[in-house]
Image (cartoon, rainbow, N blue to C red; front, side, top):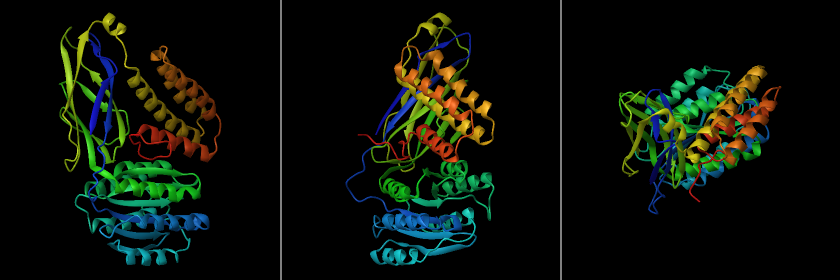
Length: 417
């Protein structure tokens, strides 16, 4: 594993509160060539009426393809739901016979009824929880094309359940198909649940996304990885990237989730500094670790020096950090603009994008990438200043979500090339 931490600037103001940014770049180790840890999965499929036709057919096929990648040491369960919850396959070792029987049962599933998303998902999580793999990944994969309209429908309650299940060792990844699901709910469940959210614009992509997620699960090298920053008194640390955060005194704990073989991940931190004496140093200690001790890297020491305004204004900037910060702010603004556009608040949507473009302009200097981002934001202003198709909103939300979380444009883990 490698860890690099790059501040945007090294000086902070003595007589004023300063704000600085740090780009933390993590590269996970390669998976060993020895046998991998077993995995424990539940496939949870929406079988409501809106899934009829190609969606349910392709969903079944995606699960079949995923089962073919499992070993006998792995476990799996299959749950389908509409307003009723059916346990198609109880959690069992993934023997060849068990997988064949599962495929036969899957092929008998038809679409019908309403959407008890919570009930189906919780039944899948229950199956995973019954047989937790000690050092392996335990995950429910939830596929839906609609809204939770039966059972638990409150997004906050579902998010809390996902977080509680994560604490018990059961993680959740979500897959939203088409234009009618709630992407904010599925993203929140995945974030709280320690998994990933995928937007599937076309049902033909279902198998690609589920196969990719299962492939990542099979190559996890570090479970529940995290960044921990121990800061000096008065120094406030906040991640801009949307990871779960816990603060304990001077320590800020940023949860990254599971890391796969040779995954590259970036975390952007914002630091707010107290006043200080000229020439004095202030700093923080940064470490990256995981639940099982698989990650090994010495802590990184970060330090800044208090200086006057003239020295601060003249200091050089690390452009790689500037670009990372600008892209995260742009991604956040685009998601805000999507929500405002959906609510019919077109002027506010434009203003959200415009504010970030103006901010980036103040420090873009002669950097072509930053100027390119400003130009793209200028185009985005017009896009969200008028009613937009729902497919465009979902695509923009997903693209921003992936970018902010260091995923590829398709939502997959970025890997060292």
